[in-house]
Length: 156
Image 1 (cartoon, helix red, strand yellow):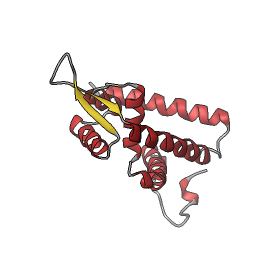
Image 2 (cartoon, one colour; image 1 turned 135 degrees about the vertical axis):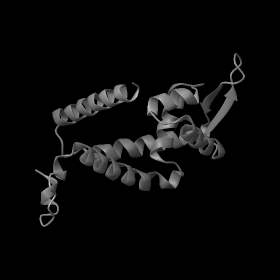
Image 3 (cartoon, one colour; image 1 turned 60 degrees about the vertical axis):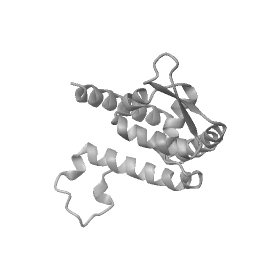
Image 4 (cartoon, one colour; image 1 turned 90 degrees about the vertical axis):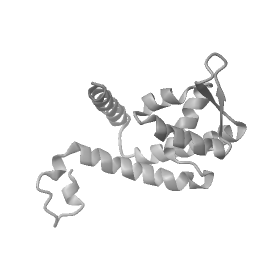
């Protein structure tokens, strides 16, 4: 099974062997589909992931989110700023260090997260339905292995 079957008249000249292309395309398909479904809640998939982590880690710092997502702190700040403006998060300074602040989810954010989780779980079940449970497990294992390997190389 190859992508050549999707466009039989197009010479791929070896491009079909570039795994990054396939991962990027699959990611784009997953995210664009999820974007449309989350639009009614005025949140993006990345914002939902932030809500998810803040809900599980009350008081988490933006720097921790930046490290987790492997994105720059100003980018995380923009996501958090929008979530705060929309009433999903609150940011409060630390009582120990006034320069550092923590994030907490609001009732609105919690309700949005609950609805978004349902959408995400349903969407992923539909998208992964073509895979057996063993294949899903193997896909997850391989994606995490690639992520950890790439993340380690980027930190050097």
